[in-house]
Each structure stands twice: as C-alpha cells, then as structure tokens.
Image (tube, rainbow, N blue to C red; front, side, top):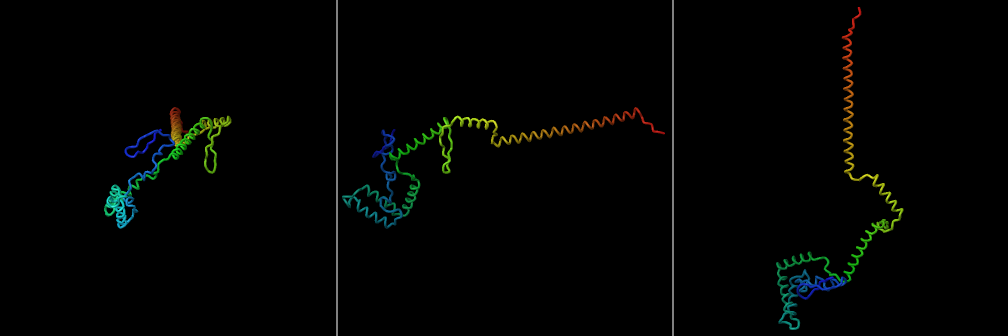
Length: 242
C-alpha cells in the first residue's frame, strides 16, 4: 500500500507503508500548515481597536526590525508585520480583509485533524466487521433462516439453523400462499371491477332483448288469432235470428 509524505517543498511523494501507518506522515493539523492571518501575525484578537493594533505593531517592530535588535531581527517576519499593519490600520482595507477572513472560516472543513495510524486501524477494523456481517447475512439466507428476535423494543436478526420441520412448514406456507393468495395491487381490483361492470351491462342487454322478443311474439300471436277470426266470419257468416 502507498502513502503520501509531505516534504519541505514541492509536491508530495509516495513511498511504501502498511495500512497501519497510513496518513501518519502529517504530524500537524492543516490549520497550522496554513498561512497565519494578519491578526495572528500581530498577536491581537480579531475585534481589536486601532490603538491596540498600533501598540502591537510598535512592539513587534522593535523586536524584529533588522536595525533595532541584532539577536531577534528577522526581515521576513518584519515584512509580514508591516503588511498586517498596513492592512488593519485602515478602515476600508480592514473591512475587506475581515469579510474575506469570515468567508474562509465558513468554507473551512469541520474536521481538520489528520488520520493517525491507530485511527486508520480502527476504521479498517470497522469496515472488515461490516463486510463480515454482510457476508454472514447472505450465508444465513442461503443455508439457514433469519429469525427476528425482539429485544428492548428493537428487532435483532439472529441466525438459527432451520430444521426439517421448519423447512416443511415454510414450504407448505409458501405453496398455500402462492395458490390461494390474491395480489395486493390496486390495478388488479380495478380490472376486476371493470370486468364485472361490463359483464353486468351485457347481461342487462341480453335480458332486455329477450323481453322485447317475447313481447313481439305475443303481438304476432294476437294478430294471427284476429285474422283467423275474421276469416272464419267471412266463410261462415252469422245470420241474425228472426
């Protein structure tokens, strides 16, 4: 496994390491590796007044000025102090700098501490245990049964080997459920209701047609009987009695 080490300058390089020592190269948090802001350079709080900023600038200038003190002089530190004072002692530049500083603090990640070897080992152990538990869950479904056990209001899956009686009972239950159970989909019930409605309408139409046909047959019989009666009266006229 490879890990990244931080050198003094330039891009990071890689070297061989074990998973236990991964990310242990960085001993300081990322906030310390970042450049200090102007308030930290002058060693004053963020809400300091102009007088406090000026006093801190004078004290640090006496300490780090190249011509003032030969023991503690540092031109690079003195340049940072001058830059911080030039930015903070003016109102407009200080407001702009404060707004930028607030944006940087808001965009800063909540967790800046780096991984240590012990922490990586803990995370790796948790990952392995999760993988093993997942594999055991699959194996239990394949070779046995998962029976929930209620404990303190929570359902805990407990692996237990299934006996032959349990397998038979489970098989009978599934076969009965597959044969006699109805689907719970609402679309199925909509289809059934539509089929019943169409069947009822067809049945009513057949009944009405049958009734109309019977009425027509009765009318035809009545007409035929009337015609027969008229024909009989013509062939055999009825003479009025004297």
